[in-house]
Structure formats: structure tokens, C-alpha cells
Image (cartoon, rainbow, N blue to C red; front, side):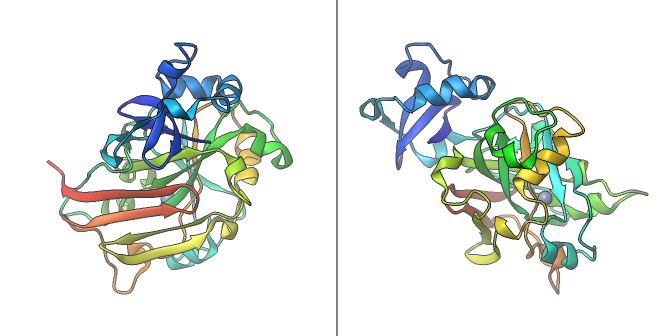
Length: 282
Ligand code: ZN
């Protein structure tokens, strides 16, 4: 199942460009709020399997907003691909390196991304796991039962701010307005042949900058859920940004960053494609 945020309303995608409005189709049993669906994911996903596709209407890419617009918690993992750790001058961590992105940076899959023109604004393509059930002390073997599905994320990062100060400012420098495109849809795990092997990548103006698979993750999605839930509670609708593969601008020789007017295209196999235009921040 694929779910989408069509003009702010919870929708089920039944074919390319075709979605069923959940509140209408369920006669109000489920509201138009996507976040509410995560909070009752078991009941919602059971009902969603019975939906009548003939009641779908068409939507355009521009109608899509983030499929996870208001996560209570956002976890992001640093250096979680060995080649990316190496290009940043880090060794592969022995435990997950965790920071957050602030909720206000979350934006849609086709939204404009505003950048500070005197900054060094970088791309980081990431597979994002969305929690579908409250999780505490969950073992890796059971962890996928707690995942509503996957979406894609672009962990846009302003490297000058990130490196300023006595300690790195990952959370702030990765949370400027518009720095969290997510989407284009949420896809449930039954749609993937192997939920530990999702091909992902990005291009800038057609030039491929990243291309890898989540089977290269240092810490897999189940391992991250076990690690996090051993220390805190994960809530429905929370996000785990699983880290980025190699190929970021910071790690290139010479370094290269995003420029105003460029189009950043981010994809995940089985999830789809986001297209974000880079604009100057006001
Ligand atoms: Zn990242």
C-alpha cells in the first residue's frame, strides 16, 4: 500500500496519479489527518486494504505534501554507510551516531528548497523509516512489526554552520526551513522484495551524485529500532532517517554544493522520486 498527502489530506494511491481520499471513502471513520492514521495504524491499514479503487480521483505531483508532516520525534543517523564515513574523514562508528532534525524543516517532495547563497548547502539522500506502533525494548528480529513503511528523505545540510563552534551543530545546520523534503509517498514493507535492500540515489541537474543500496547500511533499520527503543520510546509517526551513502558534496574533490536554480532529484526504488528546485532563501 502507498499512502500520500494530497493537498493536506490522507489518501491511498491506487495507481500512478490516482488516489482515494480516506475521509470520504471511509465515511468519516478515519479523518483526513495523516498523523492520526499512524496513531491507529493497525486499524487503518486493515481498512485500507478493502478500499474501492474506483472511487479514486487524479492528482498532480504538485498536489503532494510530505506523507509524514508532523512527526513527534525525528532521529537521524550519522556515518551509517562505510564509504560515506570515509569520505568525511571518520571511521565507521561502533554504535549508531544519532542527532535530530527539527519538525519545522519537513517539507514536500516537490517543494522548493531555499538555501543561504553564502552557505555550503549539500545533499544527503536517505531511506526514512516511519514508526507505526509504540516501540520500547523491541528486538531487531521483531522490529519490522513496528514500522508503518518507508519514504525517502533529503537531509539538506548547510556545512558552514554544521562545522561552526566547539562541537558540530548537526541538528541546527540540517534543519533550516525547507531542509527536510520527504516523500513522495509512504510505502508499506510488504511491497518490497527485501526491506533491507532498497536502492537509492540522487542527481543534480541530471548529474548522478549518489547511488547505493540500503543493504550497505552499517546499522540496519531493525538494528536501529532495537538500539533506539532500548533507550527511549518510539511513537507512531516518528521518523528514522537512516543515513546517507557516499557522494555528498562535502566529500568530493573539489567540493561541490547546491546552487540556486538547480533541480535536486531524489529516488528510492519502489518508493518513487522527489524533485526539489533550489531557490535563494529570503
Ligand atoms: Zn544525513
